[in-house]
Image (cartoon, rainbow, N blue to C red; front, side, top):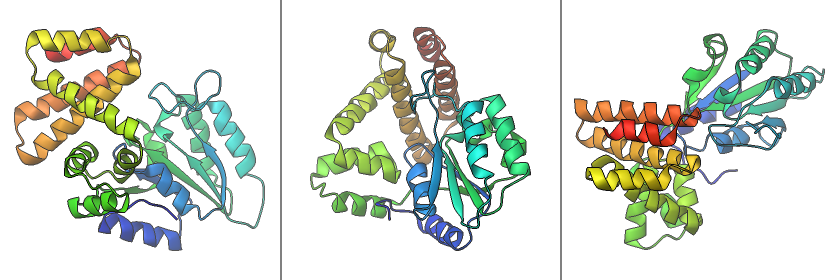
Length: 276
C-alpha cells in the first residue's frame, strides 16, 4: 500500500484507525513525515477528492505561499453532501493553509457532517487551524522512525555507500518520506546537502561569510525557506543531544524568520535580523 515505515506507536494507531476511521481526522507531524501518503493509505482506494493549496491561477502550490480558498471548500461541500450509501473519503492536504473564509466554511461542514463521509486533514502547523476546527478532529501525530528503521529503509532502496547513508540519516532525522526521496532522487540529495552546508554557515560562520551567504540567497524565497528548514534540522539535533537555553533561543529566532519570510517578508532584512 505504501513504502513508508512507521514507528511502532504510529503503526498501532494507524492500524486501529483502519478498522474504524473517524468522521474527521487530522494527521500531523514534521515536514517529511509522509502525511499525505499516509492519508492516501487510509482511504483504501476510495478517495473522492483531494484539496490542496493553490496559487492565484489555481495551480497546486505546495510552498508556504499556497492558499486553500473558500471556492475550493465550497466545491468539496457540494460534492460531499450528495447522499449515498457508500463510504467516501476526502483529503484536505496542508489544511492549515486554508484562509479564514475557507476555514469557516469547512467548520460548518464539520458541524453538520454528511453520512458515510470521512475527512482526512494533514498539517505540519496545526496551531494555524481554528480552535473550533481542531476540537472536532481526532488527531494522530506521525512520529519519526528509529535509526534502525531508517537504516532498513535505506537498505531497501539499495543505498550502500556509508558516506551517503550517514548524510541521508542526518538530513532526514527519522522522517521516512524525506529519507525515501533522498535515496531515490540524486538531485534532491545534492540540493539538500548543499542546503545543510549553507545552514551550518548561517549558524556558525563568521560575520563576513554569513553576510555573503545572505547576499546569495536574498533573491530566492523558496531556497531561503529550505535553508532555514535545514538550519532548524541542525538545531533540533543539537537540542536532542546538548539542550541549552541558547539553542532554544536560536530555534525560536529561526522559526520567527521562517514565518516572516514565508509571509512575504523581506528576505535580506529577516536573515540579517537573525544573525545580528
